[in-house]
Image 1: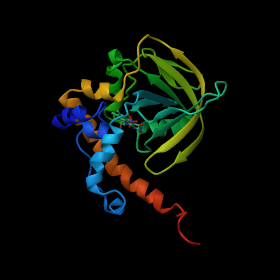
Image 2: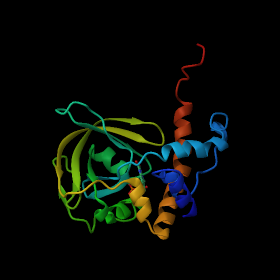
Image 3: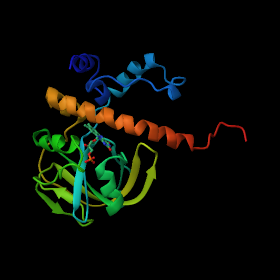
Length: 231
Ligand SMILES: Cc1cc2nc3c(=O)[nH]c(=O)nc-3n(C[C@H](O)[C@H](O)[C@H](O)COP(=O)(O)O)c2cc1C
């Protein structure tokens, strides 16, 4: 919490890493390129960014779930062919559902709808159905769409790029709608509204993810050809 407050004073929008409690130690493999004393400076740069909080949902037969994601982006300038890019961790249950169904729903929520963020950001859909007590309707792709949100998009995956710690889904947006007035909830608002207990849960989820994802990313990198290497 002290760190969060200090970070807020230094920057407009604290990065999620700073706000949830420091960064993990630099792993030996990258010590040469990113030294520990540069991490704070780098994190401060990211602290200028305040991303929207998206709720990603997906379903496969009788399984359904979702998560909170900030790694979501509009990815086309062609209004007749709207495309999004979503970076989802392969260890997350939602990735399993998207891989199986080839589709997902995206939602922006307002600050008044922040309860959705806690429901989808904390814990895994493998342990509980995150949609059990949430009103939804089924979109054209079969993805569940939250009845209560600021706005939604129905997305059909056309390709996926796997980088070890993330799967980048490129998807056509086939439908969308606006459900309530307001502005999208952002990461800094989410952190500002989190109780100490919620901060603890988010931090432990993030740290567990890093433990799983870091070796996967390094394994994936080690298989890449090195373009600077002489033939
Ligand atoms: C602010 C914030 C942003 C997040 N962004 C992403 C993201 O872009 N991609 C991702 O895979 N997980 C992201 N997460 C983590 C997931 O929301 C979280 O681990 C979730 O519980 C996974 O649920 P699942 O296993 O049921 O799919 C984010 C969490 C928070 C709090």
